[in-house]
Length: 443
Image 1 (tube, rainbow, N blue to C red):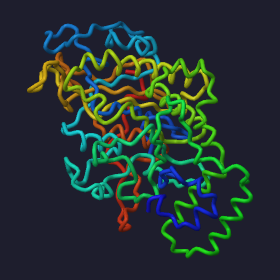
Image 2: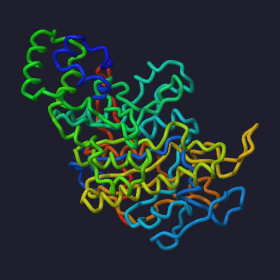
Image 3: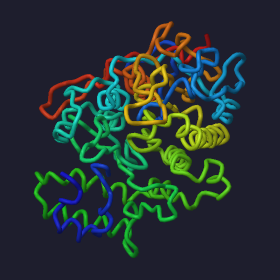
Image 4: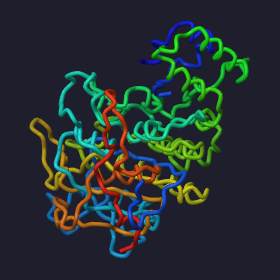
């Protein structure tokens, strides 16, 4: 049940405004060679829409112009490894990153591909329009929701946070962003504000002025006595109460308390401040953070691929990732934080121009693309996998979004084949991929 349908008495007796604007629901086996999972966090940096591998992480400077594109390349700290010329800060920090150039799957559609990377599982019901968002409750859960179901916590810290917005296109919410078949009680906390905005506040996570934790607890006891035990909203009320009586998450969202020089290092952009906020959430103990780098079409560069990438997408991402990596290393968080940077697929090797358009771009391409990994035992300073001379197909063993999912769950302390119960109490494996073991050992 959505938060805004909680009974009126609950709002009045628990301080009302504390719930408003908070979307809560919102509110095994180890792979050989991989580190033992512990109290780890994961930041999934999603390049939503699909980033061109040729113009970012896997350039082909010797390919013909209609493959190579418009960008030059830049040397990195890894001998013989080059990146796009528009990623100079990343190039200077490649000793911390493992670059996988052989990501691959078979689906070029945004919806099923996004479901794959956000859940590590195939989308049960293929759909390509705004048929019915109710269908999304048959989807697999996102990683934060899977973690919440498999390992519930009661300390007021959400298992998952998605920021700075949901991925929505018109009436359609893209799949894989919430609890799916686990139900809304496990949905991640959704932030729906740009942390770069001067008006950014998450005041709904703080107690109303003049209300103490003890007083709120008394109101909660009274509400429990009045409400039926079968109240379907009770689980959300309890979760919200735990968040209100713990200041860890509320303090993390007070990004205005971050020193100005730190905010500047990440870049005063939505990308930059989103990753700064992700780092603050890691420090608050949030285990799973999905950081959306743009709206659903941000990296979907069918038109003006090179203009969009050089003028905004790559420079803003480059600076944001540099700020994040520098802080994770300096503050000792890198050993316990897995960072994954990926889109749902890549872009076509051949440059094309859509009918009716004048500026060329690249279309969807899932056959091969690239992803970055760092932290939580990942061995930085290596390139894993290889694509062919056109960045069209892998020429070494490939990895799938399901394997990314297994690796994420591993970092969160769950075996990929952990079972959870669906809404009909049937056991279902969270994931069927394999942990990406080469990340954890240098070739």
